[in-house]
Amino acid sequence: MHRTRVRVIEEALDANNTIAAANRADFDRFSVTVVNLMSAPGAGKTSLLELCLEDLPGIRAGVLEGDIEGSHDADRLAARHVPVVQLNTGRGFGGECHLDANMVRSAIPALPLDELDLLVVENVGNLVCPAEFRIGEDARAMVCSVTEGDDKPLKYPLMFRACELVVVNKIDLLEHLDVDLDRLLSRIDQVNPGVRRILTSARTGEGVDELRGWLVQVAARRRVAA
Amino acid sequence: MHRTRVRVIEEALDANNTIAAANRADFDRFSVTVVNLMSAPGAGKTSLLELCLEDLPGIRAGVLEGDIEGSHDADRLAARHVPVVQLNTGRGFGGECHLDANMVRSAIPALPLDELDLLVVENVGNLVCPAEFRIGEDARAMVCSVTEGDDKPLKYPLMFRACELVVVNKIDLLEHLDVDLDRLLSRIDQVNPGVRRILTSARTGEGVDELRGWLVQVAARRRVAA
Picture: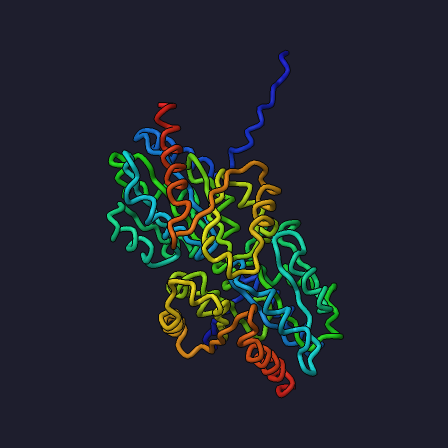
């Protein structure tokens, strides 16, 4: 008699990953690169997207806006002629503090995937749970405002580890803060060694070109792969 | 035959509220007033507590510090000789993004309740879930930093509604921000009409006396009641 082989199916019960894979397949079919953009509340995600997405050279970019309720950020982006779909977690999703694969899936029919090269998913403002849920994205990035203090990488390490890019925003305020930028950068490196960092100010525009360049690069990855 | 009366037990299945009531009974036994202090990451809860708790006139104050991991804030408070217990949600509680009644219950044996008049529970930095879980507190307060923008009451209304005090912090930075303080204050009032607001700067000390006064007042409520 043959020995019975036990095949361990580790992710069988993780519904989120199953649905994230389905999302990914849909994005792949339309060759849309997806960036999951996360941060604490008010770190400046929307302001940076306003600056980056309006004129992204040769790339058709859109946004899926995640909020508990309202469409404040979506309205801001729409005013800049960025195609945007609002996804609210308050109604039907229990006021969730993060987006998960299933919520994003429910928004896919509303997304003009055939008209996009790049989709940025602006997650709910929260440094904890968004890092725990894959949504079918190609890349994960976070915005960390210097006004939050230089201790955040140590207090929310999972978020900093989950991302391949940390945007350090509001650097125009550094001179008015008791925050040590070098210490912040070294703590980011401590929890996620070698992670790319871009210093920005949505107010002065500093670093915005570099962030735009990163988005172009991420979108190009898929084109090279395709 | 008598008509059968149906008694509806609405909270029977809400384990969190059951445990919160048990916490409350323990706090009551020792006449400890409990404040649940919430905010987004880096809004300045710990800095304000450092300033307020060191010299609270006639009141023995302690802190229960909630974080996902580490004891960064607890160490800061301990250095100011404030009795502090660290509660980490990372180990044993699945890295939760908030404190709930059960987590607080697990910390009660470590708290010197017989040596305290006031216990401030510094919740995990998050504007969503902490508002949904009672922990057995007497009062709920939040810190909202002006650096987060003037739209936060509209985006996280449940948090603003859950609190009887909104501390608007980092007002020393207002002159460097594109944030309209009047708009922020009117939006706070819009989601929670009449809620008390205290404007503070942990950096300049502005408003700290008023916040200290509020803490003294909250602690006195119980004394009057007792």
